[in-house]
Image 1: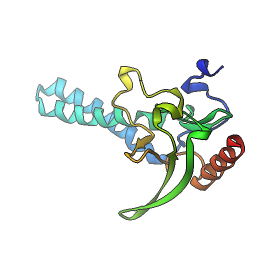
Image 2: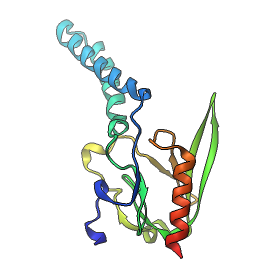
Image 3: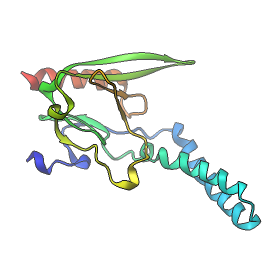
Image 4: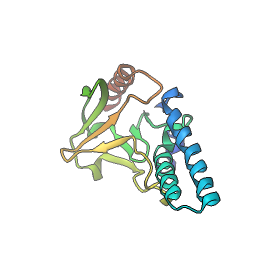
Length: 176
């Protein structure tokens, strides 16, 4: 059953990116890239092409923020899953913390999942190998050298404390 588990349909509790006006710049930069490409074509000036490439690069990197129907993080009876990372089995998790990090003029919430085993034995399913067209896109996770997976939970469609409480409740239930 686990062998057929894929990123798009992991089942259980899942959280996706929220549909919000904060992602409006992604649409604006896509429009700017098209305008700059048109300006390059009409004028023949290559500096417009550089601006088009920069705007298109920003848009490409942030496309996952627009995928609001796709589960990004979640949990089921097998473990905790993270898009483009994998499914971490419950017994491999030492603790799950919600940390507030002050960045400039705002506070960002980060979910920190500390593993008690090496990553190779913690993953039930490994989704880190992505299609080549997704290599340079935004990832919802970062891995630290201390065997900790860090996830910024601000862009999700549920409040950070709800996500943390649900993961903790499921972790306590399924690891026993």
